[in-house]
Length: 460
Image 1 (cartoon, helix red, strand yellow):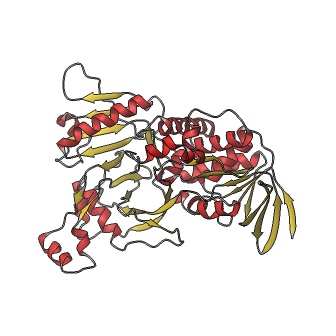
Image 2 (image 1 turned 30 degrees about the horizontal axis):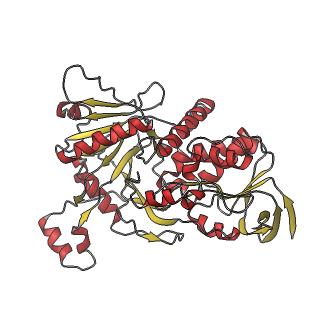
Image 3 (image 1 turned 60 degrees about the vertical axis):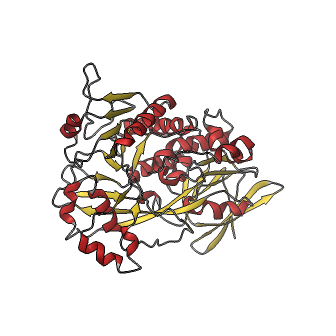
């Protein structure tokens, strides 16, 4: 058995583990950081996302908005530093409704987000004296408004978003939001960490020795060889496997996983506008079938569920540059907890379901109903806590830490979560939102009471 040493061992080379390594090595100067993963970096679930970000989050409290604002700050710093190698943009998120009763919800959400620090709410109803609506540029992120533009003026909606269904009665354009290349951001942070002494080992964590309540040794297998790494600090950044890895130090994490699936199609007929923001339909719906299709689906026990009402939240965005024809579509309508298993299995109906669901908000996509482009389907898992907030900080074992339960917001939250993890580990000053993501929050009776009346989770 080979014996090695490290100041910190991080289990997992997804975006969370890489962000933790980056902050420890680059910004906190920790000399000997070792990241362990049996797979190539960013290849388990980090590359299965829509690669989007937003600071538009509900309460209670401003912790999620604070975390995301800080994360976006860091991404913008890295974009400046790298020449925007990861193509950060500020296209925004466009929430769309066809239900007049939901206009009040849009206003409440905009006001709440403003109060929590996401930026001002601007209303556009067609009345004199209102602020001018400023469209988002196709690329870049500088000099753009924050907050949200709630547009109720039908003429303005048609002028700027003519591709939306005529049923649209309101949109909320969230402005400190957009997307980026997760692979390039992750690799950039990893390269910077390695330049400051961090190491990446292609290996599997097999166990952790805890002696006297203190992390002592991490056992790994590397190309068939057993290796013991003596270390006082172990960081669990194992993504969908954080619960299993936490059990290695005797901790049971309150997390579960949901299947997350993404579809990419070749929009060769250009039905989805390349200039669009991330588009989200916020109304429940029944899929658009013909009467003949409905009758056929109703006859089969295995397909009649396709006639049921589906939840809100189908969303999509263009992928690639102006010459690309790729569209990414997602809809997390199946939220049953599952055990994470790879390779992940997919519902064979999923590509058609998401395409038909998206056609409700962008009717031009109906052109593909008879002949859908061959979809590319991949996915991973949303590993989350009950209230859909991450776990970042110390575990109840000296030297053991967690950066996980990043749910469907791992890429956007990772830069600030990695910084928060590094602050915990180095004993540095913590930001005001740190207690909201610590495991100890579940020991607080007031928090337990809050959980019983939790509102929106913020998940799309």
